[in-house]
Image 1 (cartoon, rainbow, N blue to C red):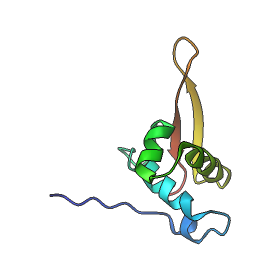
Image 2: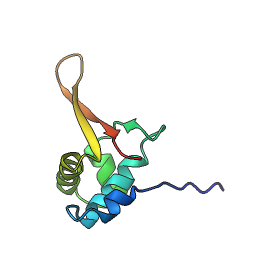
Image 3: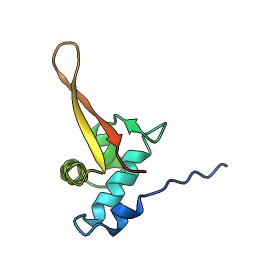
Length: 92
């Protein structure tokens, strides 16, 4: 069995503005990224991996965006309906 590791930016760990849950949400979000640059999971999928509620994920993603660790792009399907956001990691 191959073991996978990921790196959490030291700046996020040391950032006094963040909450502890932000590290779990950031790490969970990162597991959806194939290239370490971007991903597009649904809030529910992130919540399941982080073992928290969807509301907690949404609040954490807003903090991570405000602190410039990720960016979020709201997306819509061809009929104008909402689909999952696209997330881009701004730190490595």
